[in-house]
Image (cartoon, rainbow, N blue to C red):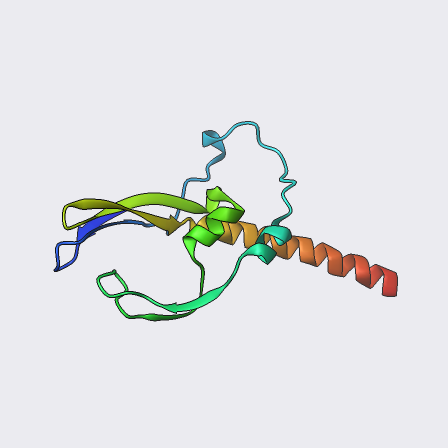
Length: 125
């Protein structure tokens, strides 16, 4: 769901609210097991710390672990959504993260690591 709002300075934002997303089997076809190397994707992501600029929904808030959408987009565009905001009558592109897509990828990477650990335990054991 997209949420649109304006701050006190008249800057308009569109923010994706992804607390839940459709995943019902009835909405899908061509369902197969994923062969994507999720661990490789996660390893490529650069985790950053940063401070949000003023005039953003998170003004001056410090983030210890976060990502930059443009950097993630270089890895895979499926993790990023393009939206826009109006500043002084000019439209500006803004990139939002599809965080649920990242969570799903991280879950698959955990499964891949778990299989590697199990294989190593069998060899040692």
